[in-house]
Image (tube, rainbow, N blue to C red):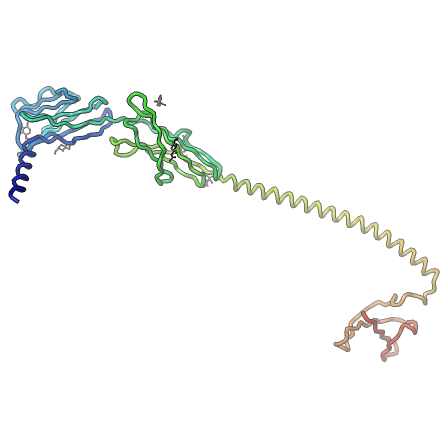
Length: 324
Ligand SMILES: *[C@@H]1O[C@H](CO)[C@@H](O)[C@H](O)[C@H]1NC(C)=O
Ligand SMILES: *[C@@H]1O[C@H](CO)[C@@H](O)[C@H](O)[C@H]1NC(C)=O
Ligand SMILES: *[C@@H]1O[C@H](CO)[C@@H](O)[C@H](O)[C@H]1NC(C)=O
Ligand SMILES: *[C@@H]1O[C@H](CO)[C@@H](O)[C@H](O)[C@H]1NC(C)=O
Ligand SMILES: *[C@@H]1O[C@H](CO)[C@@H](O)[C@H](O)[C@H]1NC(C)=O
Ligand SMILES: *[C@@H]1O[C@H](CO)[C@@H](O)[C@H](O)[C@H]1NC(C)=O
């Protein structure tokens, strides 16, 4: 236990005495600012700042800040018991890669600086209009990024991974990735590109407009079918009428001929030899007997005796049963 306490005490003491540089890794965009704090519990007579091993600022208790420039500057954040200075590099360049802070009689503390490049994001071809069910390919091009950026898609807010490929020319990357969407509904297709130095990704959005062409085609098809059917039906009706009329004309001509022939025949044969039932005018079912299905023929004049097989009472009215 005592050994542990002693170790803890020593650790705290050592940590307190040696300078602390914060942060140890910084990712910033080229052209922006980078800031670092160097501090320790005890005041130091001299603090120096280096960039890529080159001394840029010196701070002494006696003379204050020596040789600050527009690009390299420091701010006093010292409070009682905490000797602290903040170092700022403005307009950082790609070759600003290492920052060092050194206190009197101490080793140098180093931090790495990652200067990154924000490029552009473009969706090649932009907005697209596709027939429903077709495939739409969107290509996102990220030009001029460093380091190689992370890319992703967001289709109607849902993230989709991206099969990225990159080429580098000198110090920046051109990356691209392709997304294939099936045109089902109108969609927004967003390409997101980011690097560690960016808090929010750069993006570009294209819209996919889905044409319900298939539906319209169906409508057109239905319309055509209906029109053709109607035309066919009309033709059939007209044809039917014409055919019917022709036939009727022919038939009536034939019937007239028959009639004429009959009339001639009648003129030659006596009327008494008329065909049985020729003069029957009406026919009713027998109202008296519900069980019988026999038909009853009324004759309006006296028929030849041999044909009247059944007589009922009633002098003027003869009833003559005939099986139907
Ligand atoms: C440095 O310390 C000061 C005071 O504690 C703080 O306001 C500032 O944000 C710090 N800077 C960095 C880069 O951490
Ligand atoms: C830094 O600030 C502290 C506290 O305000 C002050 O005592 C000290 O003199 C300042 N150092 C310089 C070099 O201005
Ligand atoms: C895509 O469509 C959106 C909204 O309809 C419009 O604001 C934008 O300008 C279009 N983009 C291109 C490249 O035509
Ligand atoms: C990514 O692209 C490469 C080459 O274009 C291909 O071989 C690979 O299958 C693709 N991967 C996915 C997940 O699409
Ligand atoms: C990256 O894209 C830019 C703009 O399209 C082009 O000028 C440049 O040559 C490309 N670089 C590579 C390595 O393809
Ligand atoms: C997509 O939008 C267009 C125009 O805003 C509209 O005419 C079309 O019907 C829409 N398509 C779908 C599938 O909603």
